[in-house]
Structures are given as structure tokens and as C-alpha cells.
Length: 189
Ligand SMILES: N[C@@H](CCC(=O)N[C@@H](CS)C(=O)NCC(=O)O)C(=O)O
Ligand SMILES: [Zn+2]
Ligand SMILES: [Zn+2]
Image (cartoon, rainbow, N blue to C red; front, side, top):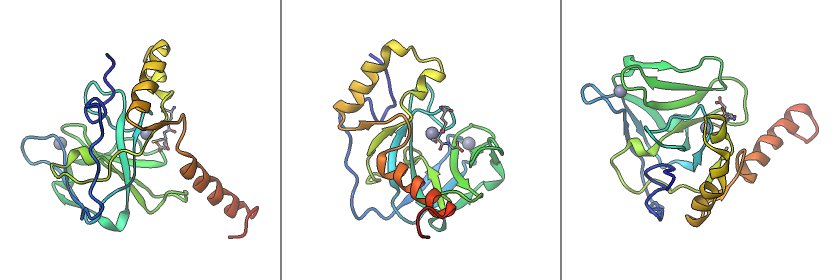
């Protein structure tokens, strides 16, 4: 049986709490962990199959969400963070010791600038928004997954109630396209 991610392998998703106030994310270091504090719940939590998002060992998917950047602060051991790939749109800050990504930030002009990318599984707290959909599903093949197993992967995601997409979900793709059209003048700003 293919393993997607510990959160997705349980058979059902634990619903988040609508009044969840945020919490603390922590890297995997047993001493001096990097911590990041969020002062709100996340939005658009989803599974991502792309090669760039951090996944725990053995997982095919990352679980990733966004939070307004003003709601995020690094609260311990910030000196252990380094940007994984300076050329990517999302500057992903990873712990230099354990490799976990604590947050991703977009500094350039981009439809999602102002939102930071985070992994709620790095928190001990319960109540974070549950996974809403699966994105970049076909991208797992680029990382070596056997294409003949894709029906099983998509079937497992659908059985959890998750729609599967090979880019982002329609509302997020529409938001990107709207931003692009406003920038080019095809739609009024
Ligand atoms: N097929 C590519 C897709 C990469 C990709 O476009 N990832 C999306 C979802 S995280 C993205 O927005 N990337 C922007 C970035 O990584 O900066 C891969 O797996 O590497
Ligand atoms: Zn660490
Ligand atoms: Zn991704």
C-alpha cells in the first residue's frame, strides 16, 4: 500500500477548529530547535506533490498551507535558518541541522506575496485547518514515482475527500490569473 504522508495515511482527516488561534512550529532538532510562532490559523492547507516543498522522510506529499506574513515570527534559533534555493519564487527557510523547512516567503512581485508557506505538522497543537485538496499530484513522477501507481494515489486522495489537481486548485489558479490580468491591464486593477 502506497504511503502518501502520515496525515493522509490515517484513513480520514481530522477536522480543524474554526476558532483555532495559531501556535508554534518547531524543527526536528532535539536540541536548540528553531521555532516559529503563528498568531492565526493557516489558510489553503493542502497536500503538494512538487519536488520543492519539504516532506517528512518516506512521504510522497508535503502538507503545506499559507499564513499572512505579519502573523509569523521566528521565535528561537533563527541563526540556524538558511534559504534552500535563492532562485525560487518561494524563499524556503530550512534548518541547517535537520533540514526541516520552517517557512517560505515570497519577496518578489507575485500573486501570493504577503503570504508565508508553512507546515502545520511541525506543531504539537491540534485544531489547525485540515487539508483541503491535493496539488501538483503528477509532480511525484518527476521524483521517481512509478506512473502506474497514480490511480492508486489519486484514489487514496479522493477517498479522503480531497480533489486532486496537477497544478493548484481552481480558486488559487483563478487568483493567480486575475493578478496577472490586472498587472497587464487586461482587467481593471
Ligand atoms: N513539477 C515541479 C513543480 C514545482 C512547482 O511549480 N511548485 C509550485 C508549488 S509549491 C510552486 O508554486 N513553486 C514555486 C516555488 O517553488 O518557488 C516540481 O515538482 O518541481
Ligand atoms: Zn532543526
Ligand atoms: Zn510544492
